[in-house]
Structure formats: C-alpha cells, structure tokens
Image (cartoon, rainbow over all chains, first blue to last red; front, side, top):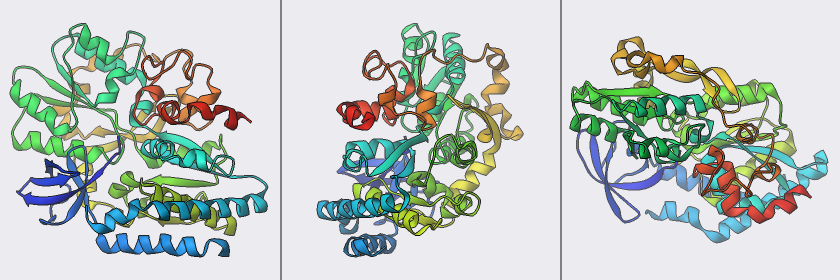
Amino acid sequence: MCLAVPAKVLERGEFTAKVESLGNILEVGIMLTPDVEVGQYVYVHSGQAIQVVDATAAQESLALWKELTTNAGDS
Amino acid sequence: MPEILEAFQDAKLSRDLLTMVRKLAAAYREKHGRPMALMEVCGTHTMALARSGIREAVAGEVRLVSGPGCPVCVTSQDDIHRMQVLAAQREAIVCTFGDMMRVPGREGSLQDTRARGGDVRVIYNPVEAVAIAAANPNRPVVFFGIGFETTIPTVAAALVEAERQQITNFYLFTAFKLVTPVLHYLLTLGEVRLDGLLLPGHVSVILGEGDFTFLADQYRVPSVISGFLPVDMLGGIALLLQMGIRGEAQVKNAYPRVVRYEGNPTAKGLVSRYFVPADTKWRGIGIIPGSGLALKPQWEHRDCRYRWPHLWQLEEDTEIAGCRCGEILRGVITPHQCPRFATDCTPVDPVGPCMVSSEGTCAAYYQHLRLAGHREKG
C-alpha cells in the first residue's frame, strides 16, 4: 500500500495536476507538493503527488552504486 | 520516464550489485560466524524482494526477516469488526482500500458484509470518499483510514477537501499506524535478532532521514532507507553489510531522489493540523502507546468515534483463532513455519490478512517462494 509511482507533470492547477505515468494520463492532488512545476517528475501515492524527484540526487546515488560494484572486495 | 530513472532499471548493474552483496555477505559470515539478519520493515519491500528473486538469490547468505509494514495486515480485527457492524446498520456508506475487503473475520469479511446489504465501497484515493459524500448528502460517509505515514497525508488532503467543499457528512475512522513507534517496540522487545534495518522508502519520503537517526543513536542498529527497484534494494543491503562488517551503526539514505533529510514538511504540517498521537492496537502485537493517530478535538465533527460511540463498546478480541499472522508480523516465524500456509490458507481462501494483502508476507511467499520452503527449513 506504500506503493508510489513516478509521473511527469503536464499541467498544474491550484490543487491538482495532470500527470503522465507509464503512458496513462491521470489527475492527481498536489496539496503535498504545492511548489511543483510543469515538466518535473513526482512520485504519486493514493492519488497525491508526495514528492518531487531530485534528478541530481538520483545521479549521485547511481554513481554510488556503480562505485560500490567496482570496489566490492575493499571493505 | 527520464533517462536517469530508467538507469535504475539496468539489469547489469543489478547483477553486479548481487555479486557484491554475496562477497560482502561472505565477509560478514566469516567475521561473525552467521549470516547478517536484516529486517525489511515495509510490506512493499517484502513483495518486491520476493518478486525480483532477491530473497531467493541471497537465501542462506543474508537472513531477510519480514517486518510489520503491511497496513492491512496490522489492522486489528476489532477495528475491521467495528466497520462491519457500522456498515451492517445500513445508515452509513463505508469506504475502504481494496485489500481490506477480503480480510476474514468471525462473521466473514467486509466483502461478506456488502453481500449481506451493507454499503461498503472500494476507493483508491481518500479524496474519492469526499466525492461520495458530496453525491450522497443524506447519508454519512465514513472513510476507514488505515495506512502508515505515506498514506496519512493523503487522508489529511481529503479532510482539507471536505472543509473546502463544506461537506458535512464526511467522517473518518482513524486506524492509522506509525512506523517509528513500532520500531522502538520491536527493538526493545528483542524477540528477533536484527543486525540491520532496510527502512521503508516511501514512509521516509514523508518523515525524512532525520526521523530515523534514533536507530543509530539509541539502538546502534545499522539502517538504510531504500527504494523498491532491485538496484535500490541490493545497494541498500550492500550498505548494511558494509556497516555490519565494519561494526558501524549509521542511518543512511540510499533513496535520495525522493527522500530528503527533513522529509516532506508540507505533508507533516498537514498531518499535525488534524491529528495527535494516540495508542492503537496492532494485530498480533496489541496496543503500542503513541503508535497511532486520533483526530484533534476541534475536528470531532469528522470523528467516527463521536458519531457512533457504541462501536467502541463492542466485545473486543475478535482475532482469528489459529492464524499466526501476529508472529509473521513480528518476524518471529516465516510463512513456511505456519502449518496452514499453502494448505488451508491460500490467496483464494485466506485464513488471515497476511495471505490477503498484496503486501502481505504470506501472499508474497505464496506467489513467489512457495517451493523455497525446503531450502529455508534446511
């Protein structure tokens, strides 16, 4: 039940936004992410956008995993 | 999907991380003479670990213990019974999340209540219950509020919506559960050895890394906030093994693309506008102080407890006899150790909620690990 899916914000109003997730267009609440902007990615849970995706942080954690796999024997 | 999120689906990276997990797991076993025991707290992790094959791939190398993080499973039978009694009175419309419908009780499930004429409706988004209330102004509409910190703000959003639209016939039954009090409870109880915790990624989106630092400070348990893709989970397990080998206890955030140190302050603010901590009863555990939420007194016109107080005078302790979900939820046994698992308890005809819910440990094992029992027992 704590599933959340990524979705791209296509349009936004005051309390809701139109988003695209895995090819589906949905209307979701943005009361929990009031500063979200069109073009950003959000994670959607129970019909509400609960957080905006931080692309820089995503890059960094991906780099961490790649580094871990190359230093597997070092710890 | 942007490229950066797609990159987390890379199969080669998953395989490389699995190789590394195995290396680290061997190093841990060499140092401690036993596999590291890690609890995945969240039911979504339980299902994702089973579905992705990770649980089987690391069997015998890392001990993965499933925790109490399935909201349908931990809801007390008494609370389900209250909603059944309410729906059976035919006055109110009861709205609930889908999995809740099939949890069997002494007098059947909510689905059976509906079959007998009770108006029980399945919704996906709590705001839908407000729309149902708007469409049925002459009937009280009750949302059976279950879920953890991830879901609670979405229910708060429904309350905001009800106020905004001036809907007076929308009520809430707060059967919410909080993750940090149950972690305190399990770590203090010490019934199961836990060398590390894989923390729930989406609960952490709301709470933030900061709310979990007590795990290192107070209990010295290595903990990693993890996402739900194989790369996220394997990376998280690897970080836990590294800490275990080095004898470190820290809380690490391995899901920074959506988890911030402070969580989501807007969501937390909305939750504290409506709710205060309250004691609540967990299936198979009992009452854990401060592990639930109640509506604040100024919102009592939305509170099910004030409108139908007789529901709290019903006989308690309606839990299902012979179901071992309680021990499963505390991580004491695995489904293969329950004699009813996959014999007279199956997803089609479940005995308890752990077999019903799409996040239940028994359902995860039934779907993906039914034949793995002999390995585990050996």
